[in-house]
Amino acid sequence: RTVLRELTEIMIKNPDISPSETLPDTDPSVFHKRYLKKMRDLGEGHFGKVTLYLYDPANDGTGELVAVKALKQDNGHVPEGWIKEIEILKSLYHSNIVKYKGCCTELGGQVVQLIMEYLPLGSLQKYLPTHKLGMSRCLMFAQQICQGMEYLHSKRYIHRDLAARNVLVENESLVKIGDFGLTKYIPEGEIYYRVREDGDSPVFWYAIECLKESKFSFSSDIWSFGVTLYEILTRCDHRQSPPVKFFEMMDGAQGQMTVMVLIKQLEKQQRLPRPKDCPHEMKMLMEQCWAADPAQRPSFRYLIEKFEAIRQ
Ligand code: ADP
Ligand code: MG
Image (cartoon, rainbow, N blue to C red; front, side, top):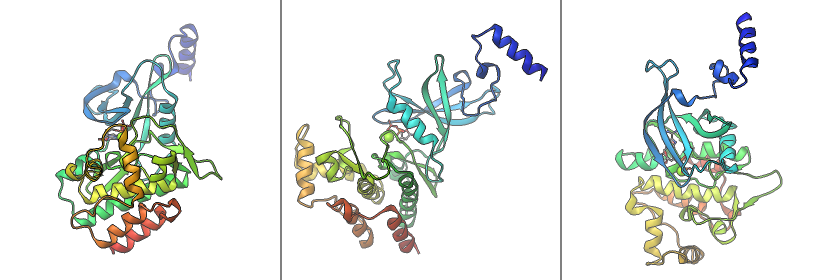
């Protein structure tokens, strides 16, 4: 107690010293930049860059490995969407969702980095092409993605960027959803979220109504899950990736035209092809996910039950 009183006095005399500087162990979600030791780059997407660090306050190599996400465009001001992404991840607790650990806040109180658990096997997109995954593992991963998504939907969030690149692999029998950068909250009583899109949208994972009317809903996540299931069943072979396959179907349309041509194809009921060795039931499931009418698409609960039954 006397130590604490002395500290308080020191702090009153020296307002420059913040409590977190003098009492480093009070909040486990506060990570100090000076204890973060960079190990290597883990990956990057459109918005963020993720790096592996060792957080080692004792400075003896006994620290923990953490994945640190920072915005790629760091021009001094902190965008609102970035704070939202952190707040959303912080509020999620599920075995199939990447765990939030904390933040690294730089001087001035600006949140610059998101600290999360490190998943050693990286994204599904990197993992699948190099590991010969049997069908039962594929279905197990697919079911786990559905479980994480069912939880997300139960909290009234839509993910809007479900894809193999945003699913992380913990070990050979556990995957988690990562990257909540495009996630939106759907208020009670509403069914969709309308967005003004920029040019960087993952259009080949988007449902038809997202492309035509920018309407995002729980059902549009189901469509993206169908595309993610397609990626899993093709083991993320880049020669069969959704963009490659759709471009093949559109014979050569590029640039501004892409979305219009894609909409035309989807309206003609054209969909991604059946992956090699894909069981009939899986093809049926993907097609249900890609129903033109959002109301006809299944829910994640339905999909989980299907996977459970098929995996028996
Ligand atoms: P963006 O919002 O820019 O798409 P992501 O959150 O998807 O950023 O991260 C980019 C990439 O970094 C992922 O595709 C994955 O390869 C890697 N990555 C992200 N989080 C982790 C993590 N917790 N552990 C290991 N690798 C990760
Ligand atoms: Mg991503």
